Length: 88
Image 1 (cartoon, rainbow, N blue to C red):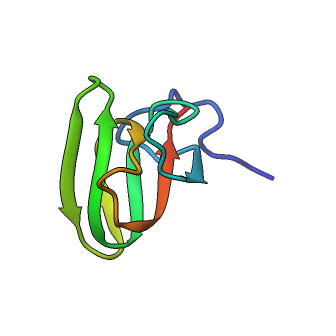
Image 2: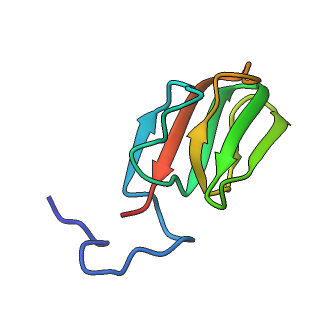
């Protein structure tokens, strides 16, 4: 299959190269730092940012949160259907 992005350098503003469902966990980081998070059902979201800060925010249904996150915490997270978007 033709991939028009194959020879491009990945950019933070470009399309994600992969998306994975996230199981919130207090002690386990994502496989790599996510470029953004997609949330299907809104609620409270507690994350550890790429700069290792814990942040808790309220997100709505079908939200895209353009923040580099290393972990989605179980403690304090009520949002569901969370997916991490990665840029290789």
